[in-house]
Length: 312
Image: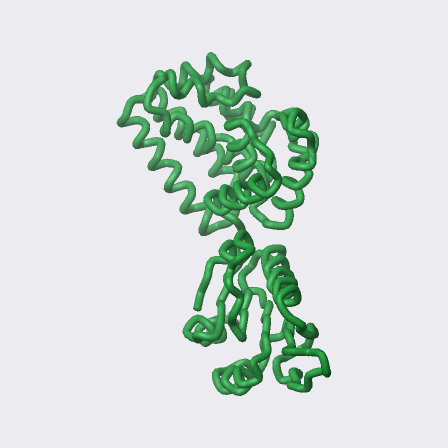
């Protein structure tokens, strides 16, 4: 049976009662985190023997005097088929397979997705909704609070890889409540504040000036991705706000110097233009999902497209 990795990650009471856990995907830190959580929770519940083995064929059913069952961590999925799964099902042990995605895993995933004694868990980089759930959970555990602007800033800026997100957010939540602010968070996250977001604020200048600033600030694919998320955040504020007063309240405090610009651009957007802006974001997200990275040319076209919609 296929399940969401966050079901286990964020729910301490999630029932772990399967013989087989196949954890796969391309997000290594999340794969490692889930396998560690499953092992830890089993060991807390019962007297269980843990062992790492190469393949499932290396598993034995010999229990020690005080052992109720064994839990195996297996990193090589060679030899797995329905016959092998059925054979080891009878042992009543726990088998955790960890495997990055490959052509070989497709057939194996199909076996575990249909098996009632199995959990199939796919681990990929976190999307916005997943980051929101994780941040909310960690905030709940810490009893700390974040200002609204700061909260959404972190949703955008924290890494899409679980281990990096958790590490950064843990550092932030270790601060005293009074010290959780934009200045300290930027220091902790070592956010590059070289002005990539400032390209957006030049949107009403001549195209030649926008191009010049863009080429100065955005030089790598990583820069494009960061720049895109800045722009997406600013565009989402426009789309989601029902009126100027609501929009004004949503402008992040740390951008107070740009407030007049934000109000100017919002006043240029009616419902029709908001729909065009949303369509641009959706098509851009589709490209990002397919390619994983955005090109330098894409980033320039993206900001010029926003300008075209705004001034039309």
